[in-house]
Length: 132
Ligand SMILES: [Fe+2]
Image (cartoon, rainbow, N blue to C red; front, side, top):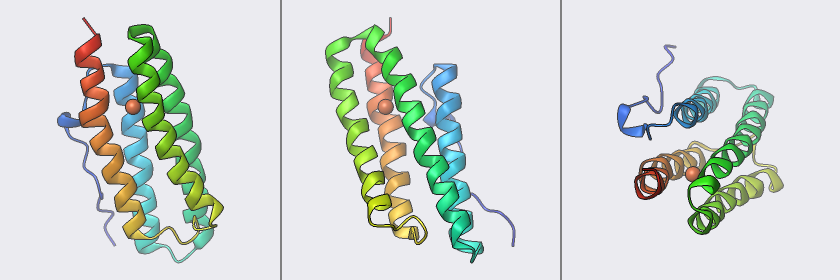
C-alpha cells in the first residue's frame, strides 16, 4: 500500500521561526506515521511505540517553544503554557486508559486537528503579537 500522508505539510503551517517550524514538522511526521501504522500495521506495539515517541517529542517541543515565548512575553506565555498543558493531559488520558495500542483513527484526527489549529492560530498569533 502506498504511504499516503494524513497531513501534507503546507507553508500555511509555518510560523516563521525555523527551529519551531522544524519541530512542528517532526510532530506532523509522527502523526502521519501513527496514522499509517493504524491503517496498515496490525502490530499494536508499533502504534504504541510511535505514540510514546510522539508524546515525548511533544513535551520536548512545548518546553522549547515555551522557553522562547517566555523571552517575548511572560504573561501571555503563561496562558499559552496552559493550552499546551491541556493537550498533554489529553495525551496522558489516552495513555492512562491504555489506549495507545488501540489509538483510534478518530482520536488521532482529534489530536491532529488540535495541533494544526494550535499552530496556525495560537502559535502564529503569539508571534505576530510579540515578535517585532
Ligand atoms: Fe504552542
